Image (tube, rainbow, N blue to C red):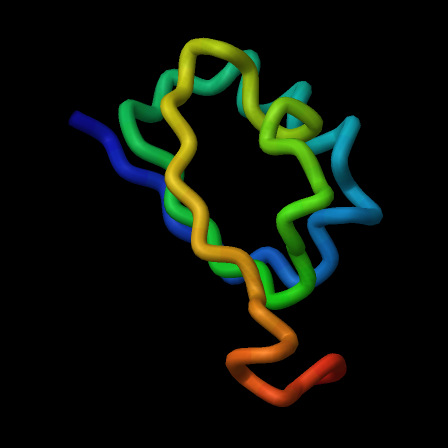
Length: 68
C-alpha cells in the first residue's frame, strides 16, 4: 500500500494537471488538504473513477469564515 499526502493550496487552479497525475499514479491512497473546495465543485474534476473520494468541504455557516 502506498500513500501520498499533500497540502495542495490552490487545487482549483491545477485541476487538469492534478487529474492527469492522479490517472497515472500508482498510489493506493491519496490524501489532500485543501481549504478552498466547496460542495459545488465535483470530485470528478480532480480524481479518476479508480479512486473512492471522501470529502469534508468548508461550511461557511459552521466556521463563520469565507476566507483563510
